[in-house]
View 1 (cartoon, one colour):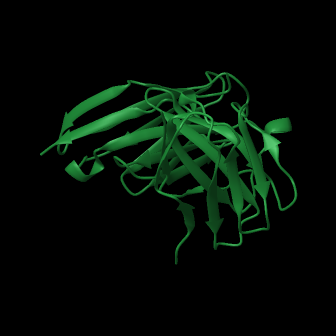
View 2 (cartoon, rainbow over the protein chains, first blue to last red):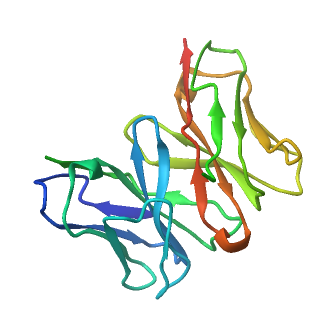
Length: 113
Length: 113
């Protein structure tokens, strides 16, 4: 039972490069999330998808785009990476958004140089 | 910000002692959740308490919620070295943000053998 799977686990980018972080869940969950975690800042919501075909901005969406490809997959794209986007990125999913627990992936550690 | 704020930022105790962590938040909530994160790993859900509940138990965990004070506490009884981790509260605000979780900065708990 894989749960939430994120790829890659580690990535180093040069400033200005683009990349897509992949996330897939096998729990038939409707809601999916992307967070970033910086030292001393806790987790901050980047984007949220309540269901297939819908996405909403979170607290820190600037510099990111997302795609809810299908019910299982929710990708996060950095079009032009900046050093300020150096962070650990977590994908999560839940059955329904409200009042249910979220299940997290293991994270992607991204460094932008 | 809709984030919760945990207090203390760091807590160091001996095995067998109880650990209490507090969370304060600013806006009304639908529910509040507590998560645990071991170093370098994703977050794991511990317990969820709804806005109409005042106390909840799960094993050695006890969570209280005071919506009038906009605060919650997590008590871990008879702590073990394996409880060493970061603990985060997350609020689900309801209304237009229903289903989106907002995390605090966390409490780093160290339990010494």
